[in-house]
Image 1 (cartoon, rainbow, N blue to C red):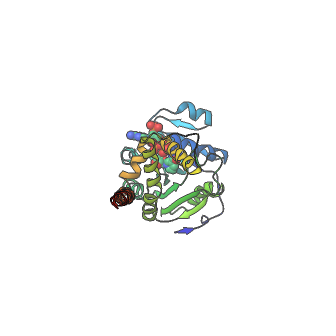
Image 2 (cartoon, rainbow, N blue to C red):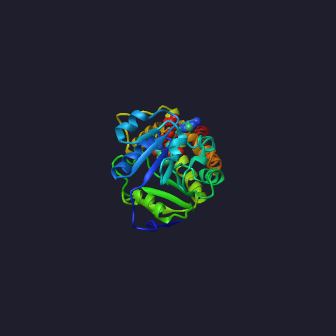
Image 3 (spheres, protein in one colour):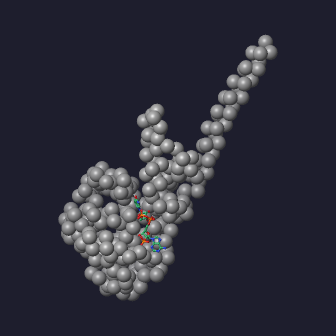
Length: 276
Ligand code: NAP
């Protein structure tokens, strides 16, 4: 892994076609528009009204979307729908080599699907902004942007895209998709799993909250704002996640066992003292 500035400082106004205009795409698009980039969008749902408010052209016809003069196609679909969405694209309607970028929260899966489905002349940049509408609501400064330059020939377009994040003050982390998935399974996936477990327990704020408990309530609330598609994608399409789920279960059993052993010992001591 390396912490780097993107490879070329010069940046230009990009024409960015966003595929999948759900919550995360809408969040990203606001910053891109503020920076002066020209945005188009296509999605399963009709987002023509919110797009019109944002000054984004919305395409109901994905073929026409691909034919537009996009420098970048930014894939913001759910993890679990990626294969289906990409396989249904009429890619023959692309009129020029285009940089495809994805922002999925797992990385080996989109890298593999993109390399399998896209024409050889398309460049591929895999990214994961390690923040979302909650954590990035007051700006992106010091928040991390992980990326792997999977297949890049047009350096200028790639650098200009990375500049979107760099110019907002993001920490730029270049690493392999595998390295990302290994770490994310032990960090982000565990965070979401614990947040969902706390929600199952229906934990609520109390009048005697400690700071630690407040953090747990906040964790529950922020993870539950993300879709179940997102959460299940972190598990289904990260090959390291299953092991981490097992580790979490083992850790729970171990901690429980320590408490039960302690309780049994206390009881034994009590009984012994009664006998004396
Ligand atoms: P999400 O539930 O993961 O994805 C919603 C998007 O997927 C919408 O654009 C939706 O299209 C599309 N979609 C879902 N099922 C589909 C299907 N069967 N066919 C076509 N499109 C489908 O929610 P999200 O938070 O917006 O996340 C989008 C992507 O960004 C995900 O890959 C996620 O891992 C990544 N990401 C999210 C965050 C975050 O904080 N939320 C942070 C970093 C990365 P319609 O709306 O048109 O139905």
